[in-house]
Image (cartoon, rainbow, N blue to C red):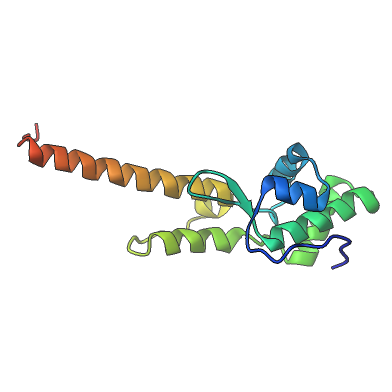
Length: 149
């Protein structure tokens, strides 16, 4: 891939770092995330979006296609699918769910495949919080000898 940017040797980048590296404004990057499946930031435990090197490479290519080659969004999507072989992030989000919760039997339904990485990360975080609430409620029930009604 032709790229005129130099990506630092790091595993994860914050949105401001990505914008500085690629020369893209944050609002443009957020819009591209909704349009291009090849960009899939990970949500940190604090809820901050973190981008991998392959995200930055995809952003650089999208920038080239849109700004230099003057392609439409739809045409750029088709070119990205050709270059990256379609949906790059589809399986990685499902793998993350499995890795985070290995004991559960996560079914990979058609619905799951349509969720973005950030949606999956939000669901995983919500599940963890719900589990902690259930455990807290159980502890309170035992501590106060509450009976189930």
